[in-house]
Amino acid sequence: MRRGLILPLYAASALAAWAASAPGFAEASPPGASAAASSPVPGAGGSGNTGVQFGGQCVEGLAEAHHVMTNCAVTWKDSDGKTYCFSSEAAKKVFLADPQAQLRKARDFIAASSVESTEKLMQDFDAADAETLVKGQITSALAKNNGVYPLVDPLDGTLLRLAFDGIDFTRTIDGYGFFPDVKFHDAADPKKRYLVDFWVIPSQGELKVQEVRIYKAPQAAEGGGWTLMARQPIPWWWIPASEHPGHVAQKRSWEVMSAVEQHALDEAAKNGGIFKLKDDKTGQVLDLEFIDTHQPIRQLDGNGHFFACTDFRVVGTKDQIYDIDFWVNDKDGTLTVDQTKVHKVPELKEGQWVEVPRYEWKDLGSSHVVP
Image 1: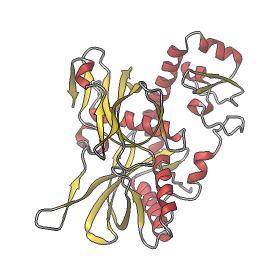
Image 2 (image 1 turned 60 degrees about the vertical axis):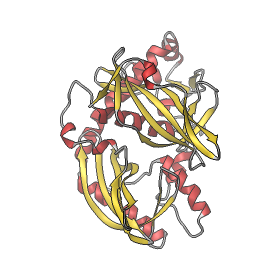
Image 3 (image 1 turned 120 degrees about the horizontal axis):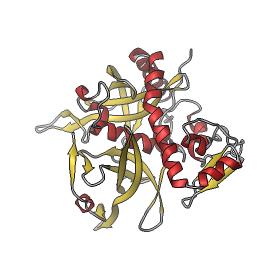
Image 4 (image 1 turned 90 degrees about the vertical axis):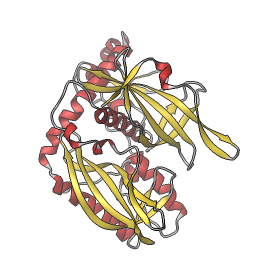
């Protein structure tokens, strides 16, 4: 069986912009990646409307723990302009009796089935399959770019030109996917080494790359030369492996980070790789690209919600960074993003962009660090 590859849409869109400005440089994404961003949502009646929620499934059906695909002939739009589909007018009527409660149920059902579903799908693959997929994608990119692997650095938007040195090893986390750790070096300086992680998950009978993240990068050493240093914060999948096996009642920080980053990827996928967020203060819709999640993760003592800070960069810029906060709720063992809010905004001061806070996390009440 042929196993396909899908790059995360936000990375593909950023790389496309850089490739357009770099003559002779081809995208690292495979054929069809750009088409995926613009194709109609399945079941949306062929209208090409990619703005519908839950991929066109009946939201009331999801609230009742059923997957019901629709043609989106019956819809409802909320105050934020998000469109929801229904299998019938009757289903819509039931939903509108308490839309907020039904939405929570629908999101809980989707989230609850996600980890279990991934764990079952992973049984058809192993680490070697993930490595084969990643090697194939890298080899294809090298062939298109004269032996160079192009990768956009999320910290500043710089286009890195890397040479492939091989796969170090692959970590497997049941229910979450495979994580090949790939060795590269700067094509112009072999001493500048990189370790890049590929998050690979099963989907519809194939493996796909969910995210690509720089784990370690070269840092100038005293007296000259370069040393390989882990970037902070480290990706959630690098938090000690002893925390991963099994299911425990108390959620760990890596689980919260995984839920937040998966939410960010899912939301960006709805908009061609751009994470759109309505600024709760100005009303402006922000076009953002995910960078990383801060550590530590905190849990509010009052209501038990988890609190995660993240960095997003304004699309098309290098140094305009927003600090976005996510509130995550643990509902019956399932982590769901309940609220998203702008924490810090970029402001130009003396020719430099700096992050200016609107509030402090301590203003939210007492909390504790999640291990």
